[in-house]
Image (cartoon, rainbow, N blue to C red; front, side, top):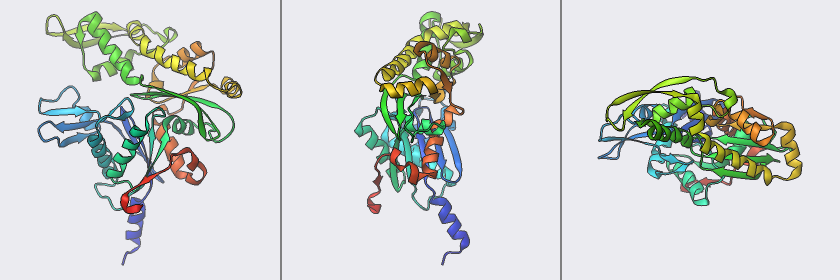
Length: 353
């Protein structure tokens, strides 16, 4: 016979959860508890046995530093699962960590996914979560979740334009009446901005740097608009291609802005194409309310200025851009009866069907 303590434990472990399964980071929201996990989407593997050695931040610390027997891998690429088995292991590990290694009752899981992925890719995400222990899985398009998380009136008739810039994809969507009216998903986002910096230093300075160094340069010196250029510079250490020896070079803000211009242009063009396809009534709403930027890419200095200059529309960065998607999923979980229509139909474990 189960006592009161057992009932409380059962209830706690049966709470539904939302997952923002991103290329760069995975965030998890548990109903009634809020955001309980935010970790890099990285798995460290033993090359010989293919067994995982570390997940999340512990695995990210190994990027570019591992011996030949260990490999640090990102299971997602461009917003979709690139390695199904690793994605499943990562999801399972994070869920078990939330439950202190125990797992009593399988939860309903709502997962944010890019709006532009294929039916096969959607199915892969759902199957990975089912195999990781979910009882039932539902999907929500990331721009819709981001709009809810940013506090926009998604269920009303007023149109809102959200640009969610993640690690692997940029999602541009016009949302009204609880659904996506017009959307575009481009596989150009934070990762491409980081790669453009590494490519530039290699080509111009003959300096080879790792992913983590390029990311740090983007955070320190990155700017999308000349108006926000403060003339900063930073000493960057890497491997000189010609001598094969360590070398330090001074890198300036203007250089970084210039080398990121191509991926930034691709994002701007996606926003413009979305506006061109938007019904006139909703364009008027967007002109009045402005464009909202979400996702980690929204933190790039001057990006709001660049988008505003290029579109002629006011642009705002969401209050908590990194957590917009997971907070939106959390609101769906907490208000499921009212917001159920914004999520996809579900798939369930065979035992529950």
